[in-house]
Image 1 (spheres, rainbow, N blue to C red):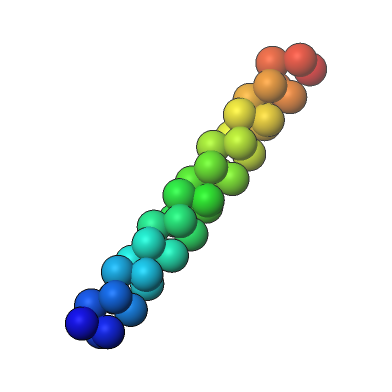
Image 2 (tube, rainbow, N blue to C red):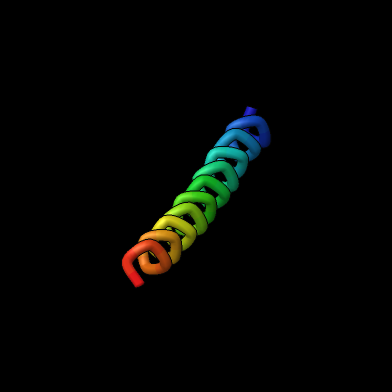
Length: 39
């Protein structure tokens, strides 16, 4: 039971980390795209 709980928490943390990375990546691409469009 405890191992299952630990695994669940770990998977949630990994998912949050990957989604945060994806958001940062998309924000970077969006900002660079906007900069190119303005210049």
